[in-house]
Image (cartoon, rainbow, N blue to C red):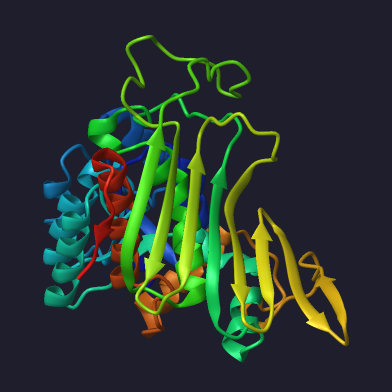
Length: 361
């Protein structure tokens, strides 16, 4: 069977660090076209990952004229996610767009509507859903072990960890700081495990208080004219329509002694609780008059989902996306779900600026 023909739009850090190696590792798609506004990046990517004769573009509109391309990976700064994704869908291509879905909730909704209109697949690169830890807890929840989940914490906390490369410090391109960068992962994972996508009200705060984040910042400092408006910490309080409460903490720089917590979540249910702190799982409950904590060993064995093969979440993400493209399997990250993540993030920013809660219809 012929391999899926895919195109890479945006050949920067996330393409080289995550997507192109994963596509190559899974081996079910050929990378036949590469596009970047900096031609040298596209050329380098094609030389390393492309098929023989892979095409190079600096304008993705030209790339989309190639009717043989099945799938496009949109791996550009947040500002351009929506426009490029919608153009790809309208050109008859399936799309995997890197997180967050879009810079604004309005753009995210437009992406959902375009996917529905065209009938093409659209998914978003929330790879934390594909971690074995996430799949283990999801199986417990689906079995009913936690009961009703009525309180959760979504955690994306760095004591110091402000990225100072690419466009991370460019509000126009990215739309925000740690909330939209790493908070989006933890919120998505929390909503996914709760299977709850109906927010009622959001209150948010954001801060720019750590004036010397380069002190201890693993990537060093930055120019005095950079990072003048982006928050270094943001916090959200979300009440869902069913009464459940979610708190979200997202920081690049925070004076705390707590260890780094990314892609992390704590879930409290009526029967038991569960948490993923980085890659460690803890299940807590009361049993026979005792408080019990269990620590599943995630380093051995595995559920059938993994077929006995240890692989990174990025590789699992790619494999499952190929299952949807080739065999019609259900998408793990549905665009409607990712859109709710964008809506909540935007509501936190809006509330932080206005000092007022944001209510959803």
